[in-house]
Image (cartoon, rainbow, N blue to C red; front, side, top):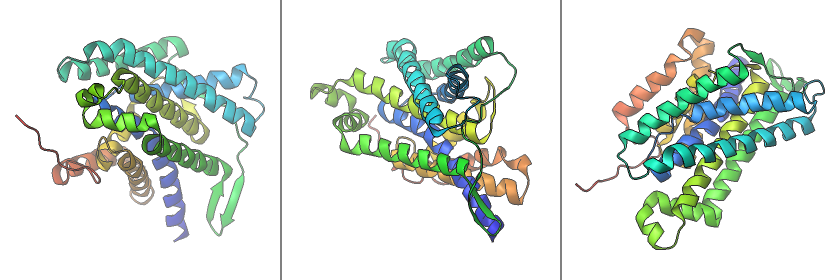
Length: 300
């Protein structure tokens, strides 16, 4: 039982990280009906930014909560600007095009970021600095919770709660929901659609950067191609929860993280990556709208 609880805790930790990345997918799809396949690479840029910021500001050799917070904020700010740049340069000119052109562009932006990352950062893996000194926070029998896991879980919950507040309780959130429901009607009512879409990219990219920092704390090995598989898994999590549904993306990420960890712990780590695709196939076969999605009728 204690082993199960430990695996469950590990799954919730990883699932929270998947959820942060999945939120970017689901928000962008909600307002643009676009799958931003470059989102996983923004997560990679977040981790790399944290690596260089921590070394430049001297936090790499002096673990502290202040260093972690400063690194997190800097990384989120850089990726927020990157998200705004991607939207302005790559996606906005194709706003009136069919769905295929933005999709191909998203794949192109993803490949560009991956290769640019290898040029700028080098193709060799790097080891994220220990911004916090790892130690046991709580132990109950064989069940142990480290301070790293505690920080990851707390940060994930705070960011999710903050996003939920922004979407449901702020003027920008109301505008985002209006654009998601009917962009032309929202524009006629005075909603600045372009600014709302830009803000959606900024929010999603900042959350992806936070996920990159949290992964760096938990799994220090980072490289320019680290965003490929987590990006795909986060997309699966968004589909699982119901693409375009913000709480659904949170739940989908947690479910995927738990299932992946349990499969790895009780069957084999060989199946760790494959389980995401099994979940995707199952959800598309039996509930294409996801756990919280609803079927929509489309006039032709």
